[in-house]
Length: 354
Length: 265
Image (spheres, chains in turn green, yellow):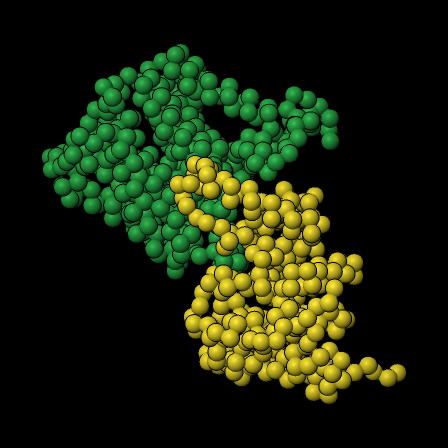
């Protein structure tokens, strides 16, 4: 009854192309932005800002990156964490060697470096598809992790193999408090999410989806497969690279190559699958689901206090986590984004059955 | 409207094309040419090499020997399909090859991708030319949607559309590229009479209004004889006839190979 676009006429193609063409959606997103930018930094405590919301945002960015490659272009990748590592180490090395560079510039360089590496490891996609490509990207994962662990230059000859992110200052302001770091991450992630949304709804995104859905037909209507696939690898890795730099600088502060192991790649792949392949919103939902669910389970099990040993609870967490993931995939294989879409469609008709 | 078939160099000409897959000879010494604004039909039994011929023209297969010419110019032998498309050659597929996850509108817009500029940053920011480009091409896509009478399904993912509608969207996607030469691989297959009539009307309109040259592979002899200027008949990878519909209908080799005779009872 409240969510209905009756009477909202679109008279130009420009209006029809708006990201949120329905007024209620625009109000909703405005409220969401106010909450994210104002309410949360004012009222959330240190733990939520630093250990929950910031990683959710960083993971969302990485998930958008993987979604561009896997969800939109149909190229399965298991090397997401490796591209994040390239971003983190590129930003670190740039700042260690050229300390004058502002950290925002080094984030861009991190993305560009990851994009370059992404294109390199995307080359096999020109000849192989599906599971075989996934194995090729797995090679990127292991090779890059090995490279950063064994070539001391990348960690600036640190004896422990750990890099420590230099402090982030912008125009004399130092990003140290949890709230400032959360807001910084939010600005970067929100901006890049809008850019991703713009890409997938324009010429570039249609080329990506055409390659995903039917590559022979895509080529027959004039789409250069090689250029399109490599662009997808580049853009995807750029997003992962910036996410990696944020992970090192904003979230962890100190980071070792093993923080970007293959399990991290799988974790991001799960976020994309659970959130919804081929959906920018789904990337956020998936990241929130994977980060928040274990916290939720841990808190819920606390209610039974004492009834189970700590060890049992830790194991139960895994069991419930796995069970819920399977349940979700059985109930809605297209992910949380599709669930949200169904809810919206139902809301448009409510309270009438049709 | 009076339509004149162009003289001068053919839009596309195949000269002495051979194509084999291992030991199987799919095409043997085939030469076919199509003049500007002409409607050429290709018929023949299954496995005669009709689709192989299309795949050679659109660059999906490379001929074992022979020459393909575009407006008199010899095409490089290993031209990629997307490069062929950019010469102004569009096609549809025998088994519909739409992008099932995308809406009808997006499928048709994708047909215009080869006419659009690419710039990652501009498209990400949607400022300036990238935004104008989307809106301008959207307008052209809507003209095609109107022409094909499919406005009601423009937002529907094509995977959910009925078969006849999918055929129409696929024609729309090919038309969106504003081709000079349109290859239609069995555009009427699996349609009922009414759908066939609609499709014939669209095809004839495209040819007459935009002067688009047509090559179509089709099994419905009524349609073929009615709408084509010329019919080429294939059998076992060879061209056995190439003439006006009425002449082909009376050709004894064609009758033996494909058309057959009405049995006396």
